[in-house]
Image 1: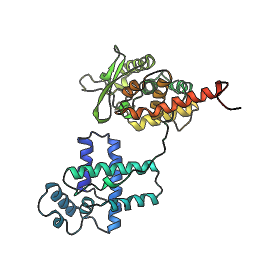
Image 2: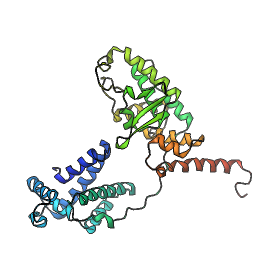
Image 3: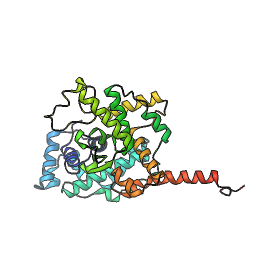
Image 4: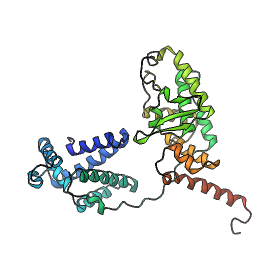
Length: 338
C-alpha cells in the first residue's frame, strides 16, 4: 500500500522535530498504517495517490472549502474528520485480534500523538483522542539478573582476538553504564574520556549526558581500542582524516548495528549456559537494580539512565523493595505468623 502524504508528513515530524529514534518512528509509522488499512477496508475506498495528495495539500494549505475539496471521498479526508466512534471501531477491531494491553496502549499513544499533531497543524478538524481512554495495564517489573550471572556472561568472549575483545568491551560497557543498545552503537571513539573515566552518550531526543565508566569497562575498552589500532583489518576504519570514528566496529570495519549486538549477546548466553531470554535491555535493568541495591540514590540512577521523569526510574524500587521483604521474611524470627 502506498504511503499517504499525511502519514509521511507525520513521520517527518517525529524524526525531524521530535527527534524520535528510527526504531520508535518505525513503530509509530506501522501503527498508523494499520489504522489506514482499517479505514480502507471499513469504508471500501480504493486509494488513489494523486487524489490523496491533493486532499492533503488542500488540508495543509487551508485553501478553499475543505469539506467540498475532499469529494470524492478520500482516506485523508476520513482521517481528518475522524470521530471518537471511528477510533473506538478501530480499537474494537484490534481487540478482536487479541492484542495485549501493552500493544494496545502503544497504538493509542500513536494515534494521540498523530491527532494532536494534525489538529495543531490545522489538518484535522478536531482531536477525537481527547475522548479515548488508554486501557489500564498491569505493572510489569523489569527483569534483572544476578551479579554472578553478569560475571559469567562478561567472561564468555575470547579477548585474544580483536572482535572478541570488542564483544567483551561492549558487554562491559552495557553493564557498567546502563546505556541503551541504540546509544551503545552510536558511540564514537571521541566520546570516551579515559582521564575523567566517563562516556558521552547521545540519548533519546538527541540529548547528551555524561555517564561514569567503571574500571573494568575502561580496561576492556582500552584493550579493544589498542588492538583495533594495530589490526590491519581495520586500518581503513581508523583513517585519521575521518570525522567520527565509530567505537564498536563490525568485521567489515563499519559501525556495529543493534541487531548485531543482540546476535552477539545470544551467542555468549548460549556459551555461558544462561537464560536465552536475557536481552541487552536486561543488562540495563540489572545495572539500575544493582546500583539501588547497593545504596545509590534514585535521582542519580535516573540521570545515568537518561530518564526524563523520575517516575520511570521508580519502577526499579519495586525490585529492591521486594528483595528486602524476602530477606526480612526469611531472616526475622517474628516476620511470619507460626
